[in-house]
Figure 1: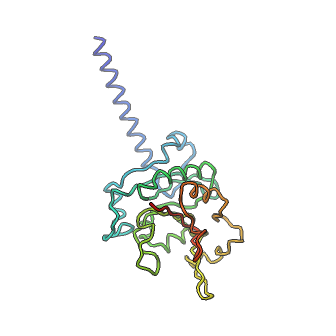
Figure 2: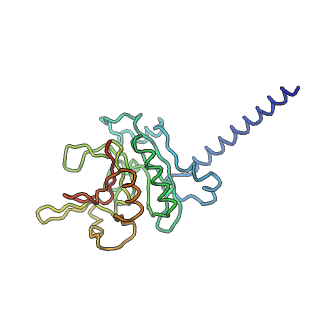
Figure 3: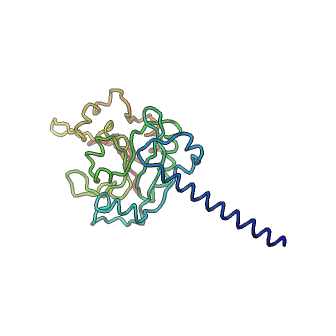
Length: 240
């Protein structure tokens, strides 16, 4: 009798756990990347669970294929990971962000974005670049932070670090690519020209002594702001 009662109680616990798990999944699915999340919802769900990674499932792959994951992409899908993290905007509001990166830096990025969230470091927007048809220009103009995108370095036949999911661009509108050649300065995106002058102070600016740069460097990334021949202030990459 006692054995049957114990078995029955165990069954009830398993059923209850399953329903709770389903509720958690439904709650998480109700949050959309790029949108604000209430602090109460974060507290109820558990902040640690808001910084998570997963493999690229079929639904996500369909969203990426032909955009960030081109037909000739040489990076196996199995090497990539999908990250969901929290970040704060300039007003201090919490938003849900998403990134695709290489498995090799997945743990680094989860750690970095958790520190940036805890320190209220502002990141304006973080959705997959596929929302912009994997086009850098529109994504940068929207100040969208992103990672994986199978593409070549502008003006070359060389694959970028983003192609392997080993690079991240943060707040790109305010931290542009800047190159001077023959007295002519190129700023990308062009709309970011006012932010090429790094002696100025402005929101979302990445500087060597700020938490964003410090955390990426601490995790073994290099910063495009340290490059000599050009500057790419939004860009952090890690080599394997």
